[in-house]
Length: 145
Ligand SMILES: Cc1cc2nc3c(=O)[nH]c(=O)nc-3n(C[C@H](O)[C@H](O)[C@H](O)COP(=O)(O)O)c2cc1C
Image 1: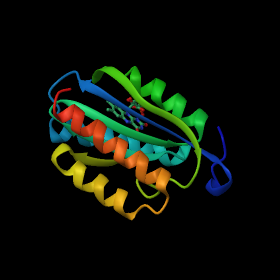
Image 2: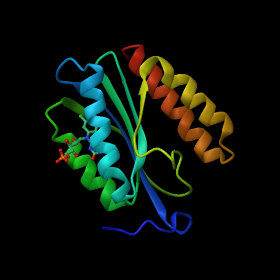
Image 3: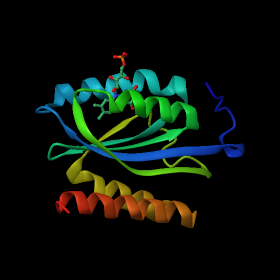
Image 4: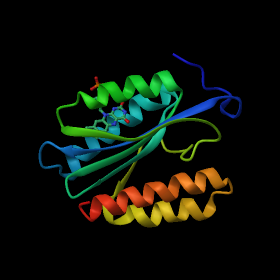
């Protein structure tokens, strides 16, 4: 496992994927996923955001490259969803976008506002651009494109 003690000197790997829930997801089922994530992610230096709405998951994972890659493999094999589509996969020297969220659950109707806030607050133009792309991806998903 990679050490993530000094994030400023390291390349942060991030991925964004979307997927389809295999079965009806009620609050309890979603909370179970979040509880697992919050249990595991801090140990691997992983933070991020999980959006769920209209049967679609949308997840942002960031952290040391090997750990993010291993976690994505594990998540992709999870029978609770299928059609995992990788939307973004990047290494960047920058701070985390979601440093305080081991895994934050956001309802789909709230996500645009959350991302727009983060986009306006970001001082780094690269981060602004990444968030703007996330918003576009999200709008495309909700429009069924
Ligand atoms: C949409 C989705 C997102 C998930 N996100 C995470 C995550 O961020 N971290 C994590 O450890 N597990 C996550 N999981 C669960 C993993 O797929 C897997 O079930 C879990 O890591 C296994 O942990 P366990 O052996 O302790 O049950 C997610 C599952 C789904 C369906």
